[in-house]
Amino acid sequence: MIYETVNGARVSRRGLLGIASAFVAVSAAPVLARAPGLLRGAGDIRRISMRNARTGESLDSIYWLEGEYIPEVLDEINFFMRDWRQNELIAYDPRNIDIMAAAHRLMDTTEDYLVISGYRSRATNEMLRRRRRGVAKNSYHIKGMAADVKMKSRTVSQIYHAARSCMAGGVGKYTRSNFVHMDCGPVRTWGR
Image (cartoon, rainbow, N blue to C red; front, side, top):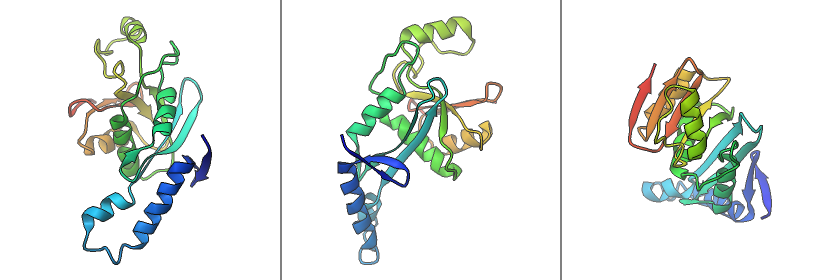
C-alpha cells in the first residue's frame, strides 16, 4: 500500500483521491448551501491520533472518508489496539474509534491519546482480574470495543466530560489511576 502524508497523517492513495473530492465538494458550498444533507457527507473526514503506552507505537491516520471507513487504516488500528501481552489481535470495532475521535475534537487539542489498554484477550483479562479490582469479567475490551486512554494536556475530568458529551457508549472515569475508559457498548457512565 502506498501512503502520502496529509497534515501529518498517513493516507493511502485511494484516501488521497477521496480527500481531493471532499475539497472540491466543500469549495462548492456556496452553490449547495441549501443542501445541508449533501454537504454534511461531502467533507466528512475522521482522524485518530494515538500512542500506545506499552509498545511505544504511534498511529496518526485518517480512517474515515466520504462516509466510508478506509479498510487499510482499520487494519492498522486492529494491529495498534492488539493485546500486546499475547500478541493477539481482533477486528477492533471502529465505532469506538468514532467515539474517541469525536471526544478528541471536542477537547480542541492536537495531542494524541496515550492508549493504556485496547483489545484484551480472555487470558489477559483474567490475569488482570486476578491482580486488580474493577476489571469486568465480560469486559468490552475482550470484544475489541473499548479503550483506556489519557492525555498530558487534559485532565481525566476533561476527557471524561468530552467523551460523555458524545452520548455514545460507556464512559468510565478512573481519577486515581489517571485514565478514562471509552467503549461502544450501551450508553452509561461511572466513576469519580
